[in-house]
Image (cartoon, rainbow, N blue to C red; front, side):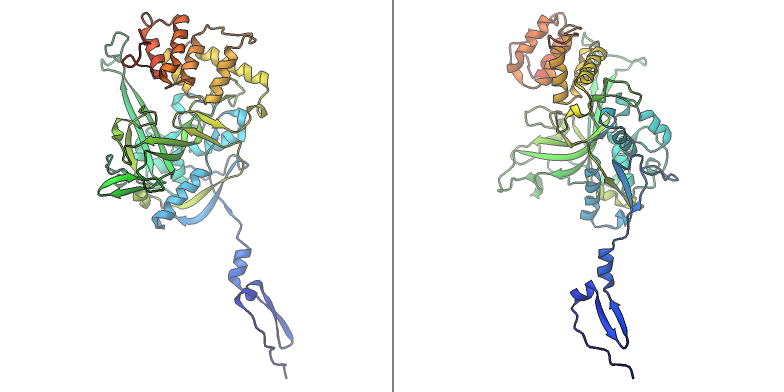
Length: 473
């Protein structure tokens, strides 16, 4: 007769670890299947990089950025989880760019996140012009990874007009808002836009071949990942308070943006001294000045803390209202390595934590600086100031100091004009305290009478205005 089964006591915890039970002449191992599943997580499934319908390409640089397939369909998620997946994806994607001094794999990972077909990618690979600014491309690829499908923007090869198509993805997501109703949350998208009519030196409209006035369009689009204070509705008015309950005087929006400066360095063909002015991704902190806890008129421009205005806030997209477009399973970006974290502040200056010397010798750096000055010194003052402003403060300071260094064999080879422009950018917004730069401009032959356009641009950059200062003749 078989021996009766021996009694045993087992708690859920002990069962989870597994126990041995004698039953008859046999010994049986009993385990909790749920605990086993926790211990032996299924291996990650490889995901594909952003593309379009019918493509399935793996990561180009898995040592820097890889992709993992999930079964999560974001349109089915509650709002907080939906938004968190977008924020988590963006946090994996900062500090990528085309500056090859910081690694070819890093550049290929960047191209994975701002292009989606072979022709499009080839165009972007070594182009450092404004034509390849990537702010809209970057958001498109993040949305694609998060499962957005069903439009030409998501399902077809690249065509121009990306920002327009992003805004048009879902009409319900485009909020009508004013200073009283502006209350974005992480995951939402902000579009800044400014239309600048162009004029001739004599003040007359600058006309195109069709006889119509020419315009310059300044635009940028980005996704918020964090806000440092809570925005609440108080009696129908968006209100911002500090942690102690007092009305806030400012608020900071953190985002991860495409279209950011990636510094100066080599391209993929070995050419040095290339300024990657808008071919990178960075974490950006934009601070906004408030009026006693309330937003000012944002249509006038982004109100910086120093009282100056940036580009007007044109569009606010509430991303969860577009959730029905996120129909494909989420593909998670997985960051494997980083050169360094870089944060750009509203002033446009960047804090770089990586030592540049690990990428290039001092001689190579100085050669790149010389090439940069030589290639850009002949620009109009307006273009020169824009180009210089695309560099981080540290990069521009190094170039300025080397150009002005008497030990430099090419010391001020092109005269003092490039140095004066660099000083204006380095001291932007300082007001009357930077009037010495205007004196330097006069010494450089930039007269307020004979070269009033250049002189005015320098004064505007410094924050010196005729109504508040006697420094402009």
